[in-house]
Amino acid sequence: MSPSEKMNFENIWVFIPAYNSAKTLEKTLNDIPVQIQNVVVVDDGSVDETVKIAETHNVNVIKHEKNRGYGATQKSGYSFAINNGAEVVIMLHADYQYDSRVSLVMAELIILGNCDIVLGNRIRTRREALAGGMPVWRYLINRISTFFENVLLGQNLGDFHSGLRAYSRSALNMIRYETNSDNFSFDQQFLVQACALDLRIGDIPIPVRYESNSSSISVRQTIRYGNGALLILLKYVLHKTKIVKNYKFTSK
Image (tube, rainbow, N blue to C red; front, side, top):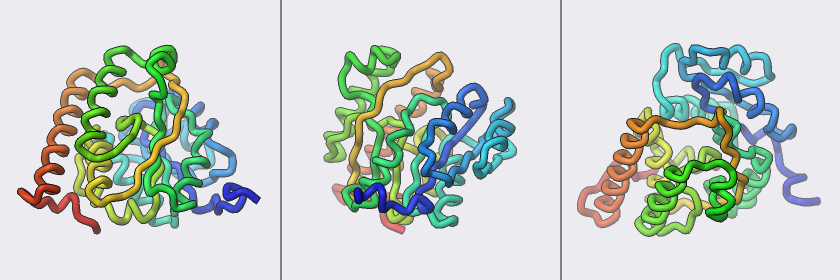
């Protein structure tokens, strides 16, 4: 019997942050492996049919009455899953850009004790990424930022900006994610915190699947995201060199 056949699927949760995701949410939900029955959708004040679509599926739905931000949805989703007994929480964007069929493989790497965090890596080769529809400017920014983050953080990851991530319960219980930003900077802050705590981060290849409905943050949001990433990296360097100790990088 393989390790995946021994997995307790009741302890694996998929969390989907959603905002005006009516065009893609159903496909995203239908793509999740049937073995995973615990799913929570956190709607961040959508004004379309996102909540209605989520409620037609057998999933948990958390509704933010107003738009609080991408990071705020993650705080709600992780806390809900942990409070309901999750041992592995898989964060999956609602835009159908990520192949969630690999969710069980990601969960297995955590359950086997190989990793504390597993990321989906969209960029196996330049040709494959661009052929899959990734915009050239987004590819270039991803490659440059991922290179510098790997160097500064001592990692060897292929895609620091993936919207498909799996976390162990222990990682979520250690990282002070409640102190992170409520905007798009949350993801980078989380990974830098994980590196500061010497958690084991791995990745697995996933196909690039950019469609017309794939999410895209604005130029303003991209600049804000980049500034947030630079700031958290600076704080990390200051913390690791013991120049300025930072509470965010300590374990709960």
